[in-house]
Image (cartoon, rainbow, N blue to C red):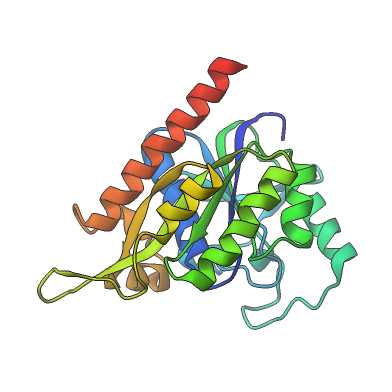
Length: 258
């Protein structure tokens, strides 16, 4: 893991905010910028990254006692989903077994040198986020939220979780921020708007940007062809690119300090 320059935890205080979708498209946007990127799917009970990348049927090789991550679209990927008998098999584990699996993902996988590792975490502030923060010594956390108050309440906990563990907060992303009507192109504030930016100001952490709801994002995730690879110059695609610029600047400043 020492050969990986930056390890970014993608977190949310609650489920259903589009965290995995954001993680996949952020990773691919970084890769398209020329960086070497890996994705660690640390959601042990609900691993969705392989589905979103169209690699559900892949299995990692093992060479010299090291697990070789699955390669796709210039990304290196590791997920619990690769190790299950089938997509319907549940993972019925308590904390110690999850800790062991995460330890193997960090120590027994041949990630090699990467510029960025994007770590997709399960919602909340329990076993998996705590293990990743401590074992990987993550140097950044991106918190994904939706605009409504219930989601923002939990996103604040995720920010404070990162602060208490001395993980720098790269910023907050407000996902599902306005619905782009597929017929007229107008924006509808389906889940309100602006809550993520307001929370970032109150918590004194950067605001990375808003990603609107677009039907093609859902279709792309289900089809295994990530949204960022196509769909022209949509507002959502532009939002991802602007977010990556802020992520790059965050780590450039951090490196200057070091």
